[in-house]
Image (cartoon, rainbow, N blue to C red; front, side, top):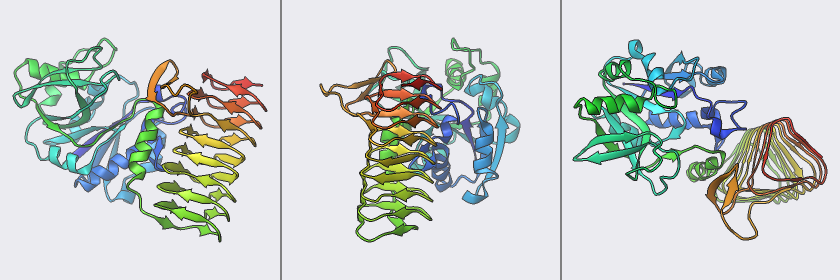
Length: 401
């Protein structure tokens, strides 16, 4: 059976992180979202993949190639204009035969759930119960073992069952796609194609799944990172000097040096060619990408630090996402908790998080002793001067002095 992975979108709600990469290539636990999904599908027995790519498609093609590194075969279709999921699937009609899987590339589901839905005989979509339906989720109404209505990003959803973006389709779906009209959002939605089939009397089944990482906003990367790091194993492929303390599951990549006095509490993953310490404190649920520097008197907690970033001395980074190639001046700190302990808002959105630091885009340069307030979102290529106070949303290429 083939799996079609929908990976063409930008993920505009993930900005500034997606200005320079597609959403599916955002790293969690030092692997792109799409790689985690690919591994789960492979573990479910899938060996043939079709990636539908578009935005920054060259990054996906370069990273995954023909799939040899994962023991699978990979084909690509390019959706040049982002006209929706049904429009994307229209392109693969000649590339699939028989039943096939479709998975949203910006979600993570387990191999057990993929295997179960792949074993079905008729069109089936995956659902999962959610407590918070205020997010822009597709919601599914169920009755007597079948789907009776699909609401795409409903304002007042009538159900707590979300569409998890994992489908088994038969070739019948292509007839429905050919009859699908544009949605109010100006896109051809696969959920509209399914609703058309329901309205015409087709039986659309559902499979309730056990695990689903829904990634809409940048701060959603943090609980996903926590979840995936919980399953890592300890390994040391680098050099650890004397007087380093490591507790729990800590993974250290090739050519990384952890210097004396560093204290690391897992689960933590550190990439290749990193310089860690001396005398730093890395706390649980932290991912540090390749070629990073975490220096003396630095504390990093529950954060994602992407490759090539330098946090060299007297810094605090908590509950934050740091893009590629950033540089922190000495003494710069990120606040992650309101004084009144209330939920933190970012870009006008209630994150439902009591602790959230900053979302920082690529190549941000920060001078000494700057203060970055809770929920700040800082655009790519921004320069922040010594002693500056930063709050709110900062546009790319800004200068704050």
